[in-house]
Length: 385
Image 1: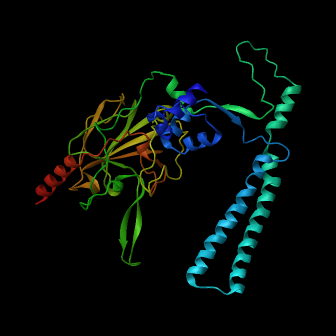
Image 2: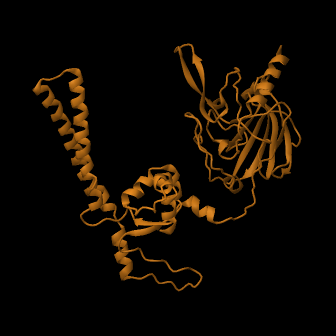
Image 3: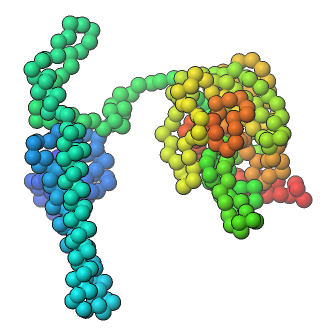
């Protein structure tokens, strides 16, 4: 409560009182709700330990769910007011027309309220297990004879439980862990340009992020990109992302990948390397069909390489393994890059996104260096001439 008081008095909501030198106000439920509407206050409040009534608990009358009933009437009146304003604007004054429209609104909301009543009785009420479990625990206290296992606490009779903000909990413990993952390139960043010289960072993302003109249908259609394109001028060093076994190094010319080096990595190691990435683009996706994140091992595919430093054996995370190039269908492009894939198979994974996972959930992408990529683009275009 003391921490909550500090948060509330320290937010912009009460700046007027602070500036006037007035004492902190007495807080009401309304004040707290107002604070939760402000992102800077809500974030701080969200990091506090809190105790409140579980969603799985309610009294026999379903009092807290019945509070929703009032919202239907409020919304019905708002709809009528909007419709009335629209009718006035259109100059529709005939009483029979206006009454007919309002009758339709009433019938629609009556239908909604009927469904809501059924929802409460047939779905919500049967799912409220808290009270039943709490009563059973009170009659049969948890016995625990194993001294190495903490005794479980019974559920509270009032349905209230402690909840904790998971991010805050992690922040409370400064645990040093060994980082397994090493970036495939130093300073990995998306390609700023596409191969047509247009500014389009989404072009190198994983998913339905590209388009092509269908002459037959006379329209643009979406096109799949099954890896992550990381900007890299020719002969940029590539590194093993995890401890791995080199499975193969060959030219996959028919598929357009050019020279490809494939590493086999442990499933646990890859899963431990997931970052907090969120999808950046509308048509970007997490994974394709057939990818199993719980598999024993995975394959990291480094494509469009100029050469490999190692082609067999085991490597450690961070070890130099190859140099980028523009082989395959990346030959001569203005945006040289490493096409990087995380797949279920060393090769032959299938068409499109099948058996592949979005590498952006592992590669810690850095801010795009627009000047650097523009200079490389212009240099490549001059070399073409």
